[in-house]
Length: 227
Ligand code: PRP
Image (cartoon, rainbow, N blue to C red; front, side):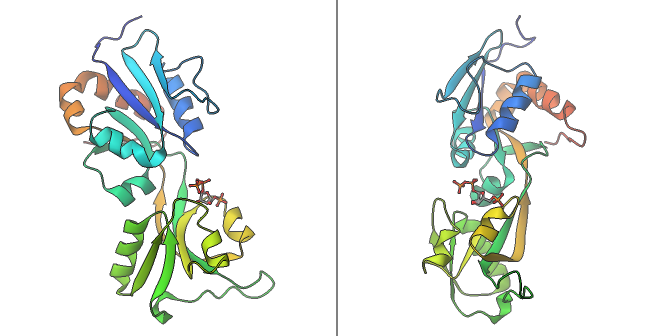
């Protein structure tokens, strides 16, 4: 089977928490491969019958692949877009992968009333995060001094070992915060999986790119196609 339009497109899928949902959505619009599973070690897949390649990259790298046109389309968390602000189109909220970006700090035990410190009480605090830009903007808005410690993962460990006073990280179930006796101070943003598109590809491969966006939007109860 061939598509109405044979523009070859490459779609970047994110490793990690959004991969399973991304693979499932692609499969629903006919973009699948027998070897493409969340556990795969293979990183590139040619979809039979479509001029479409699927590549799996680190979630933080999806915006870069799409901005530079190595991938025409990407699926990535809004958290990464807020952090990196890539020059790409973001036409569709896929709705899955909901999580929150929060400021958190060591808290009291659950037996005691939770009474986290308010930001206005602080002097300069060290904040560990993999979202330095989001964190910097937050503290700038608050007018509070901050020293940001950039980490790549296991952020929740930082206050326990004395590397930071607070963290900015994503929270899904809240289990990781609780496991490290951390309490939420404030929610900075919410994140879901988004479709992003390379700006040039939106024009040069318009038909095929819009077709994929509309097929994905058609799967969403509240999906909306924008510019
Ligand atoms: C995220 C985040 C927390 C955890 C939160 O890490 O950094 O560690 O998930 O989830 P929870 O609220 O359900 O406990 P992730 O698993 O994405 O891995 P990473 O630290 O490598 O980014």
